[in-house]
Amino acid sequence: MSSDRATLKHAIERGEHEGGSVEFKQRLTKNLHLADGRRESLAAQLRHRVLSGDGEATYVVGVTDDGGIAGISPEAFSESMDVLSLLAEEAEVHIADVQTWSAAEDPDGGGLVGLATIREGTVIRDDEHIVVGTAGHVDHGKSTLVGSLVTGQADDGEGGTRGYLDIQPHEIERGLSADLSYGVYGFDEEGVVRMENPHRKGDRARVVEEAERLVSFVDTVGHEPWLRTTIRGLVGQKLDYGLLTVAADDGPTRTSREHLGILLATELPTIVAITKADLVDETRLSEVEREVEQLLREVDKTPLRVARHGVDTAVEEIGDTVVPVVTTSAVTGQGLGTLDRLFERLPKTGAGNIEQPFRMYIDRTYNVTGVGAVASGTIESGRVEAGDELQLGPMADGRFRDVEVRSIEMHYHRVDKARAGRIVGIALRGVEEEEIERGMVLLPRSAEPDPVREFEADVVVLNHPTRINNGYEPVVHLETISEAATFFPDEGRLLPGDSGHARVRFKFSPYLIEAGQRFVFREGRSKGVGTVTEVHPVEE
Image (cartoon, rainbow, N blue to C red; front, side, top):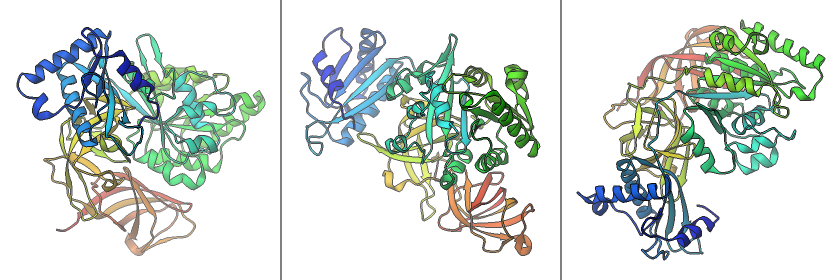
């Protein structure tokens, strides 16, 4: 809920009048406002308001015709937003932002009043939208580098631009990321589209609206205790590319090697950014560049210095064997233009099949006042639209729950539909937020999913201090699933470096998985990768 009521007060003071861009509504209902003839009339009114405001209109919901704050229930407000979204689609406009307040000064009473900003044009374009996952040791400048890229602003040398990402206040205070965070920028015919005021959600939405090509960053965690979260970000987000940062004043560390191993194990085309070049002299910088090249050669990859070979070559060669290397500084701006040109031109690699049925594994959940439960993740396949009937699960008992799509947001920008490869938040009707768990999946209502508790897999043990025996219990990271599982290797054991076959059983809950999906398993400093070869659905 918004804390600053000045926006609401200003909209009410502007008032509702003929030829203006402000409209007051106490509430909107499907039965009344979407009835025959009424829908077309209200859509025309909405279009008129948008045109009167030079492409932007403001709808204040929960107020009387004269602007008096009445307040409506969260359920009534949610229905009003659903109706307004359908009217916007009819008028070929879209809801760009929604803010809500308590109708009374006392937050616990009086219902809700809200303000919807509606803009001209329908979204979303079917252009390429690449998703980049960052990795690297703590304090190696991942978030700072991304913050400077998405804003075009130089860092202050203290990591100030990292606060421009979608992170929590306590993370900014401590200077450490404890969960995944997100950033976005893009490109149009005139060049780079960046955030001008990163602390405003609406500015992030503006980038999504204006850019013809988007680059979304999933910024992972560099601190060793949260490697599990890093793996979740790199495995579960349907990334197109990995961006590994190595600080020039530190060089490659054990964590750098660990993160590089995860990126390569998931077969993700990767770029290495040597950061903090402003903190060292040329001799030290050259040493670190050689250390990075040696690190890549040790894992059978060919380093490609972009400064020497050019962006064109990097775009053509990046892939299974070639890893471009860019030297950067968020303080001086060195190398940031090179990364811009790379991200502007790199093709999408992990889009999934748009023509396949919709599927999205859930990574995050949250509750929005007046909207309800929201499930966030990267769409794996197909398309989704507001109003679609879906199913969610599996629940703890293996069953799936019928739900409906209320609305869709992408980087705080409300859209009518989205497709494979997009990071979205989907507001759901028919379920409470506390019932949704990470690792669940959204599917069409017509699908017939079979939840799985046990599966067969081909596995490779990358690192383990001893041998893996029957009953070994690591955490398996598959899509957005992070679940303890019990391993039963063929022949009863696997040694470090071994490839083999194993039966794997989730310890606590069933999930929806299928043959061909890749996963990472980890326990302490032990690590391995695998591919699902056969699933054993839970019996009714």
